[in-house]
Length: 226
Image (cartoon, rainbow, N blue to C red; front, side, top):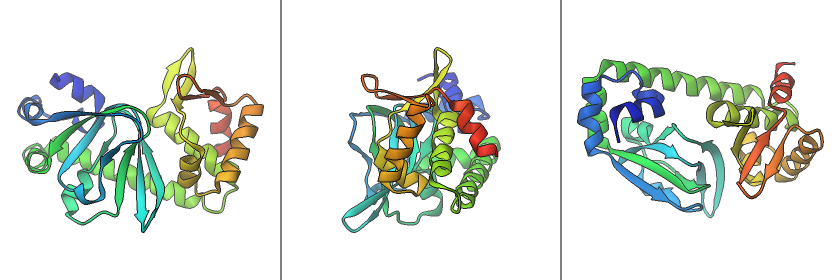
């Protein structure tokens, strides 16, 4: 993979010194996984940082025999980097929602890269601040109706990872259970609300391509701005 390719793909590397990427990329390893496959197990956090080259994954919080989806990530996202930095155990795993390709960078190489490139350090701080802002935004939605919380999830996924197809924003057809978990609503409410959004023409499910068409992306955004 060429340095300019990874720089364009991941926000973390957009400000990196070209010499940093020239040194780092030959050490990186590409992995491919089919859908519904564990990408990162609970006991593997802290070994490497992973950059999503294509596809979608979900991050699950584990508690005994149960698992709750806490995030859905798409192309350009990175995971595993914080576990390297804080060196604490994780009760979470990462599972592919679709066929996915990731680039892994070992923990020692990732840390060495941060230590030698101040621009990457600054970009990491920016990413951490952005994530804290997003977490705060979700916290502020706790007292909002279920349809607002679900609309926020769809808009967030569309904004961060959506692609344009004939002028319409599309995201992966995330299962209702995962959408419900992320939105902190019941699966039954998620199914009902998605049905209502579909009736209004705001969303459409493309089963063959496994995509959700957010035809009413602007309407969903306006709903959140009220």
